[in-house]
Length: 185
Image 1 (tube, helix red, strand yellow):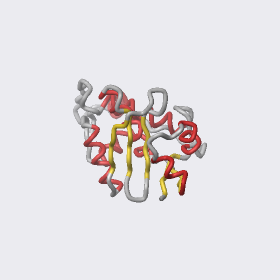
Image 2 (cartoon, rainbow, N blue to C red; image 1 turned 90 degrees about the horizontal axis):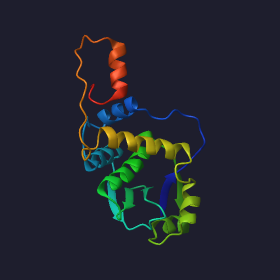
Image 3 (cartoon, helix red, strand yellow; image 1 turned 30 degrees about the vertical axis):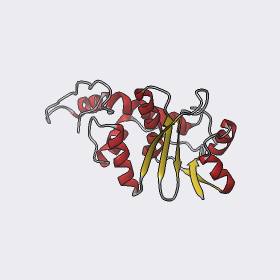
Image 4 (tube, helix red, strand yellow; image 1 turned 135 degrees about the horizontal axis):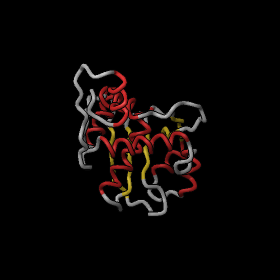
């Protein structure tokens, strides 16, 4: 069995901004507002493999979610003992890794099996994933993308007003408003 996990290679690359995220979402066939399930379906279609979401009763002081990437399936487990809004944010954080194209390393053998075990020691998870909570660039970027998704795109939140500009609007105004919010295709 092989499982791929995120690798913090320490490389310098810029964090995905909202404009780039919206471009990614358009390429996935999503515009403006959508559900977590619709985003999961679009990511699964793009990656050509199933993406399964599963609530798990993680210990409150431990992990709140995780993404396992195997050869055949992507699997996101998220904390079941929290609000639906928080669950969506956890799942969107893991989607952030996929949207940003974070690199993975392959874990095999007993270590891979231990990742799938229901009662895994959090210290093992930290060692295996090579990351700690929001300290690596990839974690910060995934959290940033989850925040953008939740604030501007996921439908459980109250929709925000959109700017509508005529085609004749100056490019600098379009760029400014595009940076500030969704809706400028």
